[in-house]
Image (cartoon, rainbow, N blue to C red; front, side, top):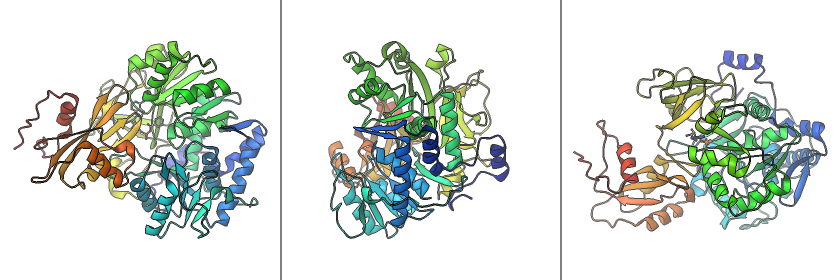
Length: 554
Ligand code: OOB
């Protein structure tokens, strides 16, 4: 049974995945103890000066799970988890699984707007925060939200950091280190139920939650780890934020731990930190977005760090230019693996035995033989001939069947027979490899961060002086894309400059990575024959200052 508000796979399909051995009835909460039984004293996690063995990790998870139960966390509770790349992220996530609670993975860059929405949508009873982190007081935000949302009863604050009133004895704010008790016998989770929620890259004004089940995620991580050849000698560097599906489970943290390897947590993806960690910990595998890969290549020209242990660099999350792809092997001395993926499920990857052309120019094949992939004409829904571009549709044993509590959106985002409409334009080569050709969804991918245009637009029109707003991506050498806002000001009112717009959106509590990079005022916006804002024309105009702004609107 899946939590209310989720869309389960049809019974026959679920049965098929079970019979094929894809779903094995695994409870993610049981994994740390199973890993400890298998890998005992081996190092599971390296985080700052700390080295944590598999035994120690399982003990900490058991104690923290019991601590959560003592704090009133009950099976089925949703808990928003917003921590950076620290050991407590891994311990807390697994402790919550163990206690039957369902963490909602939030980005540390999220601010009041995003966190309020995640808490409201999930009905969260708890919020786990880093205290004061990069100058932002998450505890204060937790207090503010608890005052607004009666369901939110606890704010758990990470050890060693402080924020407003972390030590207050009012029962609301609890230091994470106090979430610790003698281990309890706890009931197992239903493997077909939601284990945690990932955030969708979003196409709508408000971000959606993606339910990931125990069985589906165990399958994804096991399969990818197997294909990546992970074993006890593998060392994975979590360079990207671990709440990102790419770093958490492709194979990432969970796949590496499932294989007896070591996970090294990097505080951020900068070359400075990561090169030092690769050298010191003899890292064999890591994953980054193209923007980070570009920065690493730049730094490589100046750095004499020993990167010889690195066997594979996975790159995904945004379009990888072939020119950049071609530099990875010669300049970093490792193999490139292209990864196309999404928090919703489907993953495709290039393989070690793929020919060099495929590795540089395709995003590889789906990781599961049970992944179903269709390329259709976006306007008619009919399949297009092999090799032609169309919208990518998919379903499979680790791809969601519906967003959480979103029936209306689900009716549009899925076909009648359960295929997820990815909003990506892709083609399939005769050998079955995916080539991403573009997007039809209204999203900006800025250095790997996904920004729903509609979300930024909805905030922009609340700023005094703004009548209409249309947000489009504009190509950028370093970030891949930046956020370009076309605005129509209100007659008689002063049009706020970009700095004032940014300040207004920050004031509203929008995460910094969603702020427009550029704003341009126009007399009106171009419309399609159906009367919708013509974003194709706007994208062309954003990329070319010479492009006529005389849209000839009726
Ligand atoms: C990953 O997941 P999300 O959910 O942040 O973003 C998914 C979207 C895709 O629909 C596509 O538009 C874009 O990001 N994308 C790529 C890509 N990989 C993702 N676009 C072009 N080339 C690629 N290689 O981004 C994600 C999740 C797991 C593994 C890797 C990436």
